[in-house]
Image 1 (cartoon, rainbow, N blue to C red):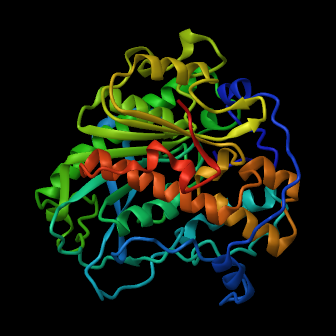
Image 2: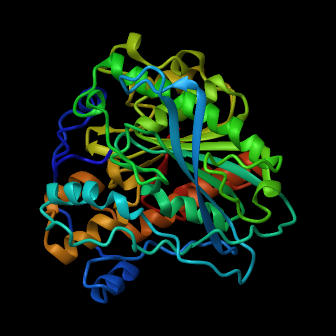
Length: 433
């Protein structure tokens, strides 16, 4: 979840109870080399930085699509007949040497919303070029002709987070031969810009502390979004245009998708939605749950998500950090995770990084240190509360490697021993038995 201030008072009830006693400790900021270079040479006088470059063999391209579900009214608006609208971005391997414009990080219409967020961190308004943060991707290039079709991986972000806030992972997976589909959950995300220029901000019911009832409604809406998205992707794979505006899709993209091999990863509330989507839709073959609370409030088992009682048969990966030394986010300490672990029959792993924090599982792991180095804010204690004191480069490397290994093993049937003992390669990451 994007914090509404440096101290993140908008954290959900579940998060505050499960992760109560949050203490911010001073951190030594380590600015990634790529970010330092870009910050020192802003092209237009505004701050910008580059995200870490993808590690796979394929170049990467993207396409944004506007989806409308005429059969479902949007639950977050008063107009009972307004259909649910979504914006998605598809990241995919591009044909070698294909040219195209650089993929923006955020669309230009989102600037005011992100300036408000930056202001909550003490960063001057209109001083960050959110659009031109480097993504290492192009827009609309022809899809690569690979020997195998592309497994599809869905991404559902944390509450208030936009779909592009884990571009680091999306681009990296695409560079390794996946199609990654990131979705904005309209009226939940900090801001969503549609092709006609409309910018939708969060519904009042979804701002601040959420009641268990509203949190459950948000997860249910996300799951419906994800299932609708899978339906639409099947039309895309059959060669039909699914964009509501009839815009052309990149050449070869539809035929490249393998909808028999679908994974999902989600962060925070998106982790809960990912797990629930796996429970309800067996088209999803594997999922990674990054700090998803798996519940709707407090520590009451009656408020745990249904997936904690049914368990999962599909392979899943849990990934968590720490909020205090006494409270690691693992299946041995978090009751809802304990229940999911106990009731699941499929392959499962739990990896824990003690020095990371909640926002480490997003692009903030790169962006926050770069912003702090440039502007002197947020202060070290606030940075530590958001992303911990782990080295951003090493944790980004670990997170990308672990997710790629998980999906390679689960969707491509390629044995990847990394998750059996991640500490051997990444000393900060521990497998929890």
